[in-house]
Length: 270
Ligand code: IPD
Ligand code: CA
Ligand code: CA
Image (tube, rainbow, N blue to C red; front, side):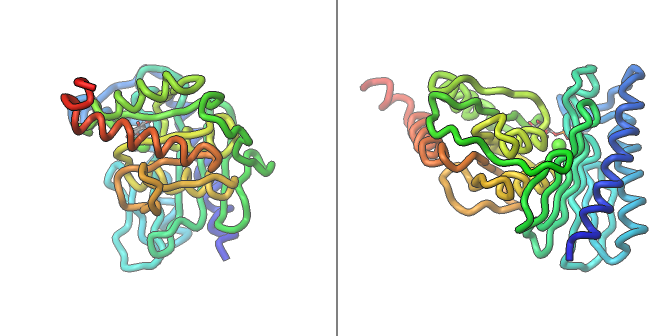
């Protein structure tokens, strides 16, 4: 049933991606939503294009865009749109960014697209039908040990829990091949789905950052939960995606770091 939805979303993501690639060639004028929370003309123009296209194809669907665009209608279907994921990278000319659109039915993601115009990589997924990179099926990695894993995380610009995430970052850096912080959550999920990363977590992500990406991971055979291994909620804050094989080991590390974070004096005395 979502067939038509996915192919339309692909068309729109490609068009918005081409716009971003074009705008990336110019110097960027940066505005601030909050300190360290950047927005550019590209975010706004990409969102206007996507929302206009979605509206005309799906007038009865709700649309939530990061930059405030959208369509407030009472519907079981809702499109979550990040018109430019990786704005800080984009603004600095660091070529790691994408467009991402996820379609949820009653808060459960059923279709998603992530398009990276810098590499011409198109990631697509539909619930129950697998995940694809440029139309070829993708799968999470088979690496089962944390010590052989490459991981990723992110630091939201507006969160107050950077200290805790730095502690996770430190511990996983000691236990793995390393932790990347590339600056586009949607692409981080896709890297888990494509077997490039074994795991990715972030403590505070909005639904438009994670709708398409989380579906990509589960459809590629991976697992998505919160940091304690409990059921993932699209409208919740934290998220942890992995190839499934390192999931339990990573949950144990999150729990251990959290314990130490909460009782630093007791732990230090040991
Ligand atoms: C951000 C990126 C970044 C993540 C932040 C997001 P934006 O999205 O996905 O990797 O760490 O939490 O807010 O602002 O570039 O769309
Ligand atoms: Ca984002
Ligand atoms: Ca964005």
